[in-house]
Amino acid sequence: MVNIEKVVDEIKNDGKYDAILDVVKKEVGSENPTRREIRNLVDNNPYYIREYKDLNRWGELSSVHVKELKIKGSDFSAVKKAKEQINSNVRYLRNAEEYEVKSKDIVYLAWAGFIALPAIYVIDNIVRLFTDLYTSNESDIYLSFIIVLLLSVWGYIKVKNNHKSQHERYLQTQIDTRELIRVGLENGYFSFEEVYEE
Image 1 (cartoon, rainbow, N blue to C red):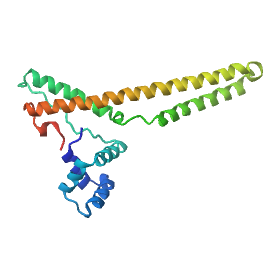
Image 2: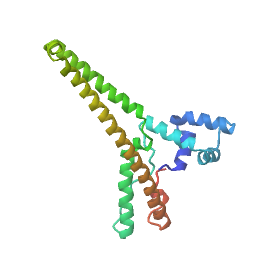
Image 3: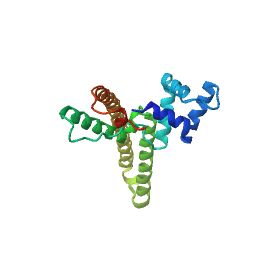
Image 4: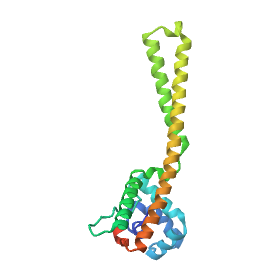
């Protein structure tokens, strides 16, 4: 959901994207690549958009360059409906941008571990300090450890599956929004400038 012209302009002029600009300079063999040269690379190699989006994600900047459209009183029903759907989709796309990329399962597994191990440690310390359960009911203590581990694995599976379904929803919302924008531009519901950030 990026405006390619904005991407090209930011790569050329915004210091946040100097890492991408350095790759462009090497690729075109010039210390001062033209907008046309940058645009050609961006159009023909998905690496540049991926890197642009990754830098924005790490910098907590949005790569959704679609604006929310103003609904005018003179808009007839089809235009109003299209604008409302685009606005709804844009709000979702901006709020759920982290779901654009597939889940890195190892991260969720690490989170599950970071929850399980301290929980087991706390249970162990409380039991050792305040009770004599290790001598009287040792199996109950170990059962509580197993329960914590099972809950952590269950949480990992739930979070992983949620990310997968949100990722699929995010990609489908992008496709739907692009189609709504294409139809709206073709039918003159709004102009390119009204829908895309510059």
